[in-house]
Image (cartoon, rainbow, N blue to C red; front, side, top):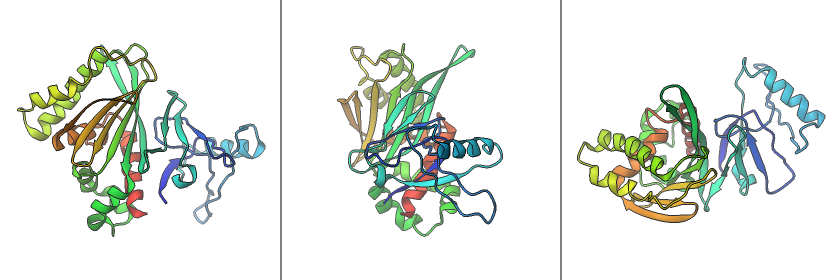
Length: 287
């Protein structure tokens, strides 16, 4: 059973097997479960219903929002109980499955912003990062399995080792900006992935970069809501799909490492999302 961490900020039904969870920030997960308010208090679960005007729900939400600046509460939710759920960021409307395939668990949701002439930031796409639970445990438990959750959170090598390891991972992008063209996507990856290829592999990687970016051909359309998946498969194969259609695959450990660094590395697109990813990765290893 996999437990992930959720900040308290949204409600979730408990009586229906297929549920959509509404998040209210770029942090990946949220659920309206109240925690007790004193140092000696026990954690108390709050049942949440689809009707958010229910008195029990309203009281819980009032308590949470009244304390959001003085405390930061966390609760755990087992994805095994909600294997068909999606997590929705209500700020952007982007939705992400809790599980991709049979085993890739959602670790965090973030937002890619882009500055226009230094004057305005636009929301380009929301992204979700997934990892195979069994793969994480198999390859990393020997080195990190005996560390506590707090020790794992502070261990910088853990995150680096995961990006280097031959573990199945997926970065799922959902387009938010309605006027985004495939050329813009190609250009953005040329810049961002290109800088990481140079960082990790030196300057002689232009052919690898061109092979990757050429997958995003001009004929592909990516209106608002389109989904691009960049999936790292066994053997360090990066498989790219656009709206469910595979557009190419490349075997390159360097390319996989460079791509993941955009979302999990030292200078990520969304730092809060990175923090959630690291926390939930550590939680996966503890299960």
